[in-house]
Length: 313
Ligand SMILES: Nc1nc2c(c(=O)[nH]1)N[C@H]1C(S)=C(S)[C@@H](COP(=O)(O)O)O[C@H]1N2
Ligand SMILES: [Mo]
Image (cartoon, rainbow, N blue to C red; front, side, top):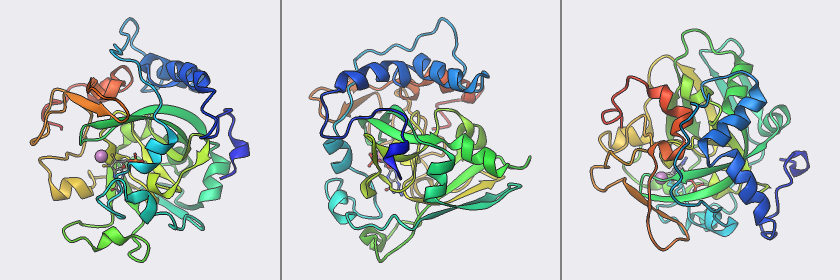
């Protein structure tokens, strides 16, 4: 990815001095749901599914600060490499992210295979600062670079029968030592309902902190769905398929009671083995309360109108 294409003047990881720039942008862009929706609406002109509910500001009980580049790139869940979060960076160091193609097909009028360079040329990355809340109850704040998944999906023209989107990670035992582990139905797969996939907050990320993604964060292309538990944000994607039925996912295959298809962040619904009411923000000493839909309720709650959120965990 050519970083000179990036519009935002994002600082390099070692240039942390312009933090105010990030903090100001953060307040506007993403962490306040209203700000994010306003930015999205300004960009899209039409009130899409992310429309702001007037008069309902999202309560932000504690200020959010960006996690450091070092934190974001050295504490990773990427089971294809290791279950040890601090070992992933080293084990994935030589992962080959070029050449790389992403096959986009299924129930679409214009199936296409995109080279990774085609994607960043067609859909120039923009900055999105989002919270990432892992189902294990830790969290970070990450300045992603990426583009709305909706733009890619529109380019392939989903047919009327497409209802879900299925995502698949690369399966390469030569490069991914964790694939030897028994008990995991590789390749890693995830899915979204089509309206979730088209939501303006849903992005495909190609970078963070103004730099191309490193392998441990899912280079060269990973999904980011900020209101869902982190396991939905599938890494190193090689295939995106529009389908009619709810797709199987790796985690819901292994433990359906623990990792449901929707996996919306919900402080009121406990994981069977621990509470989800609070979280440990990496770099902080005390826990902070977990926010409904990870703080993006204003933008996304309407996607689930009429659904019993305690059941659709
Ligand atoms: N292919 C793949 N994608 C994955 C995972 C994984 O093990 N394999 N882990 C998920 C989980 S549980 C989380 S919390 C996030 C972590 O993203 P990060 O390491 O970039 O912070 O990636 C998600 N995407
Ligand atoms: Mo996670």
